[in-house]
Amino acid sequence: MKHGWIGWSQYFKEYGRAIDVLPNRDSYTGEIYKDAKINVHDLINYVSIYEQIEKASTDVKAYDINPSHCVSRSKRNINADTIEILCDSIEAICKNPDKNFILAYNDNPDGLLHQFGCQSEEVKEFVLDAEKKIENLYYKLLDTNTLLLISADHGHKDIEKAYDILQMEDIQDYLILPPSIESRCTAFWVKEEKKTEFEKVFNERFGEEFILYTKEEFLGKHMLGFGNKHKKVDDFIGNYISLSIKGASFKLGTYISKEKPEKKSTHCGLSCEEMEVPLIVI
Image (cartoon, rainbow, N blue to C red):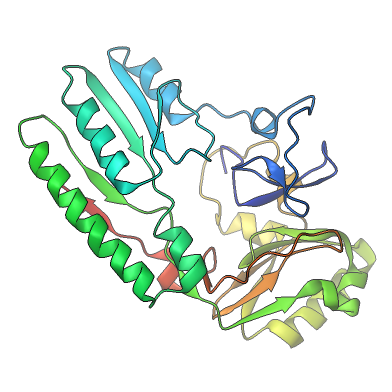
């Protein structure tokens, strides 16, 4: 709500297209706009946690450890494409005498879950291996004054079916822009004169698998949290939002979209599997 970064693909009127915010690329063509007059991250323009911490506590150094394809928001960034490098980097920072805040991120098991599903051997193997490496890191940090917090930004839900909105002519007729944000939390821009009809058809067809909210209902239920609303939130969420409550999702795309692999598991709906996350404190 406060920072405006609400999902993977957000529509920017300044670009006239949906952008995958994290990698800063066109959601449909995959094009990266290196020569854009203003970067989408600058358009959202929020104060990062790193900057907030260093401003509030001038004796603390804030570090960002993430895969090389991620855009860093910290002036102290370390690229770590494996759990091994991530753990080694944490150890090296924690063994220096400074006061440090470290936010370390790895894109697995999320990537493996998308590709192989929640019950796959690939995911189980990664999690067991990561547990061993994090346990080893714990023992290496025993002589340091370090608190480890291990968590996730979301859970995951196996996908049983995916509806292709682009192939639904009646639904397309209600829209003025392609849907965006996420496949299980989807923003719709519906023509004003078609709202009543859209609600009726959507609920008849998808009502057992999705909850449809108006923008006002969605914000009124604090689905994006509390606090002051970022000035661009209204741009991003359209006038309707659907949230998946079962194993269904929407395929988001246009006729110029690049083909993407089907995701066997994903997130951002309202099931407990994707909303509940662990918190491990060591």
